Length: 575
Image 1 (tube, rainbow, N blue to C red):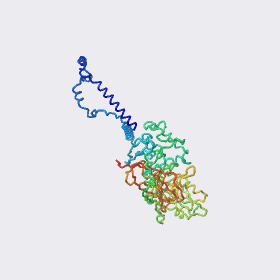
Image 2: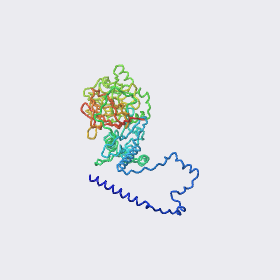
Image 3: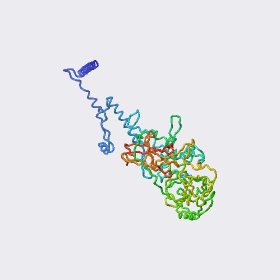
Image 4: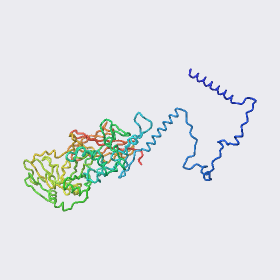
């Protein structure tokens, strides 16, 4: 109340002063104001009546109308002296500034050669933090420059890049299966591959050498690449990380879904055609190189029919009646004896990476090894197993005598005779183990009594240096390029495979909050000799980017240690 009374008094005093000043400014009563000096007015025009500068008719006409492209002049806004209005205007300007940045730095939407659209960097629909000054600060694109980081910022397809480089790399890509290769698949071989790569743990040395080579100026030149194009810098002394391996933990705008729900199903009956069967095309011997040259990754030509007609198979070693027969005659005799088997079977490479495509499920046609040995009089006492004989050298691969029922002499896949890249005219097929036992262009079998460590020669999963499995079990998501655009509110079906070589898959789990929670689906009794091909249908409820992660469990309790994750981007309106 005291403050209110003081204000009234101050206002009254101010009014009185203003009235006095106004009275002093008027002429006194009964007096005449002094006449103005008109001389100056006649000799000097006041500034307000200065004559305009001369203009042409065209200029005058132009000046009479504002240009169509320019808005008509308006009176400048009178700045408010209200502190709250000033503050609100400041915040509006700040918000508009960040809205414009968000528009200028909107995540790239890219159309792949297949016509599929992807958005590799999440949109940020809401800021989740203490500093809130706009809907978004474009953290991913303006600050992290995420659209210009990672392998696929420069290389739309790593599969095409590696398939077409000068050096004939083992053909690990498998676009027929729907694999989208990332750096994760490179690391299984180039991290620890004792006996297969020249030096272990040299992937960084190799890739830096390629990118910064003297005669490769495109990376740091035209592409504008630098260290951060591939890496993420840490602040915990952990050193540099591969951006593609950690980006999901660094980006804003990824929507976490706790205990994700969907519809799950699986099959083991779907098969590929022979043209879709992977072939790594290893080139470490003369015939390996020839197979590569004949196959789809080389000259892609079919070997002569004469090769099939003249090919011979020998059964030797600890058998009573060794024999050698031409392949056509052997097939005809087996068919006449109803010994030929046609069945669905898988083939998996020991180095099949998580997220990779070194696996197939096909219909094979072949002669059982048991029948071939029985035709030779059976195994003699003391036999421990059978060695597989290659055309160009003896084979390291073999089978223990109690597992020979898993081996077949295969001459057809998917009802077609083998082609050049897949072992024409005939190959060995050993079910449930590493594909390296599936010797191409096999010439026979040798029953042996040697004391062989058979298990060590049939690896069933790739080991890390510490002995843990890198890919057993392997749960992989297929046909989902990074950032695939899907429609909000509509069902989307993910698909992929799970496999564990010689062990059954008993469960598959999905996470959509980067492994914090998992939704588990137990499988019925499965056939270990076929892949598990799964489907997971889910509906995004809101716009945003979502990361699906999958893992599997085997009958012995092994759980995936290397996890495969993919990101999809849901939008209400997809152009």
